[in-house]
Image 1 (tube, rainbow, N blue to C red):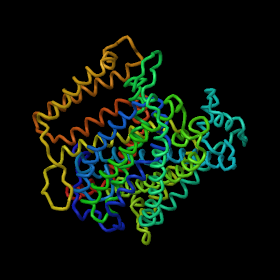
Image 2 (cartoon, rainbow, N blue to C red):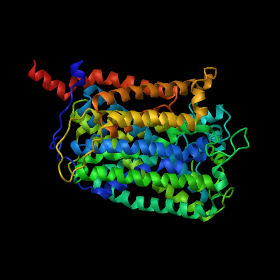
Image 3 (cartoon, one colour):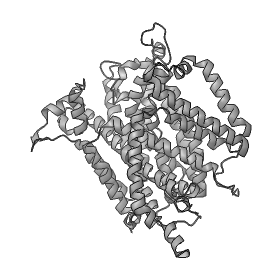
Image 4 (cartoon, one colour):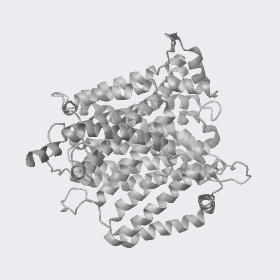
Length: 562
């Protein structure tokens, strides 16, 4: 058991010198904005609004709050361990090898599956834009086989997906249905990542400026058409206007779509070895980009829900252009601009995610948990060459047979799980010497503060949302059983944390990050957890068959103890 939880001790010279250190604070900020503002605002925001109504901004605040404290924990790790690997590396230093493998495996899922979803979203916008300029791409070449089959069997109202199934050519008894735009953009982004970090940086910074311009334009134009009455729609079966028409449970049901918007800041933490001064620039860049993006998301959501009734966003994959179409504001030139820039915006998300995964694999390979081939660095381009190419295939192949809804939930649960372990890992770190010019996570004794915040918040919420707590005690409602159980487990875990904090004087900031991320996990369904468990079971099999035997720490231990 001890060998499974051996920790790796990192120094400032650990794994140093292979990659180009060319990124400054504002480059990190731009990469953060590139990853955070993309599919979350240009695609999944529509579904989140439909589920939670205008009140979904509360969920953005919760996610932003959780991510802010999590980002502080990431920043603390980044200042101590300035090497590639993100949460995987941090877990290796705090929890040990087995948990590090679990996190690394989760991050592989996060970046791979996240980019599959983003590639699908890019394809949707690209296809829609081509239609607007009079170029039609056959429906069976713009979606996955699984999506089309599911839509046909479920008698979906999505005419494009149903038509894709009915009109697809048949070869050898198999319908030819594949998302060509998604496959092409995945190949192009893989090629760009292979060229080097400097080229990727220049491409990204230019596109981020375009993306911010169009979002500010949407806000500026849309704000003049806001009807504040739309912020308080009537709840189903009621004549009373409510900010949360589907209740707080409805808001929480949108957690996958909302949280997906935030997972990008985790991706930029893998750029430690390509940052000029990672102990200073990486923490600053992460926190600045997170703060800017949270404000943008909240304002954007208020504008969209103020312009169009939230119920109209059902199944809408392009919400920013949707509000300007003929059935709503009817501003064709805005619809055209947003559709065009959305393609650019989502491209930058693909870029950052596609850069992230090879560096995770490189870090795991260095530790012996994956074959040595994954740590190869291109002599000229200074990128993990083999890992970058493999990433392209790992993202491209599932595009052929997966669908967006499954991918979205699967990605979010893996990311939140990684965040939980990062916040928990900071609680295990020893004190460090303060060095000027580096980030230092402030220590605030949570002995009294954390129990007061949690228990006080629980009491306040009980009186603010009594219906929500009545659902928790309603044993006659099986539909709410899953969510009720998750909340009760969450409360029990936090009461244990309150006790441990009182006894051990734990730090308040990582505690709040840990508690917030645990709460977000309550929004995941049993189906999410099932597939998450299957993924981890596969990962553990690979670890014990290869990683454990070839681990660098294990080999070093055997040399000392033959």
